[in-house]
Length: 200
Ligand code: ITT
View 1 (spheres, rainbow, N blue to C red):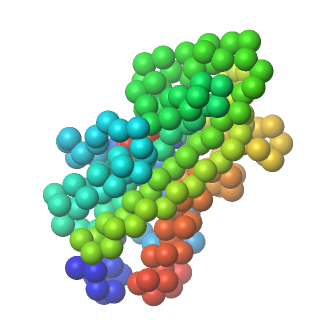
View 2 (cartoon, rainbow, N blue to C red):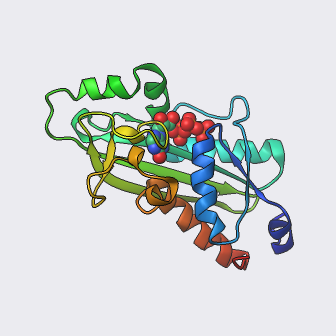
View 3 (cartoon, rainbow, N blue to C red):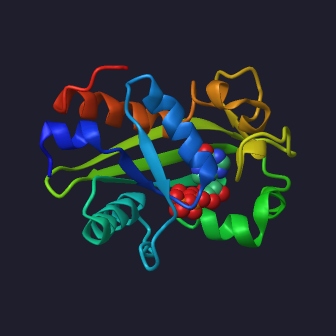
């Protein structure tokens, strides 16, 4: 593996159960002529850890070992300053349990609403193990706004985006600011220069 032809011939498998993440990532990679194929998370592929890097790298290594094809994994989280970084690596669990409204409730009467979304993308093809991260600063809105996107999008207002939440943005607009778009752009730059991929 890892020779140029194999990478050009094969798509990269993005191991994720989240279709929205997949669409946002593919939209970034389209500009670079890189194709992804989505595969749901394989069983026992995610570990619990306080580090997005650790989770993402573990999933990529184990995903590659099972599939023997180039894989990408991404772990992302929302870090709220007033909650000392919570829910961070536990974002998926918190979203499934207390949800967006539960998080808003934790911030009742709190005026310092700064937060960061972070994404860590890992690529592994049996030879190259690379991680790329992206962050976006913003604030937690006081109520849900917009019905686009997924997860905590309706309550996250990125800086310098005219007060709109991610939930009020389409994919293209969200990708101008998002943690995911930043991490995948870094990956795409590295991948296309390493494997000499030209936009199609
Ligand atoms: P996979 O692990 O299968 O890729 P996931 O949805 O569990 O999918 P993560 O663990 O990376 O993805 O993300 C944790 C949670 O953080 C996710 O379920 C969302 O609730 C939230 N999240 C991550 N990125 C987000 C984004 O761009 N917009 C809104 N919420 C996001």
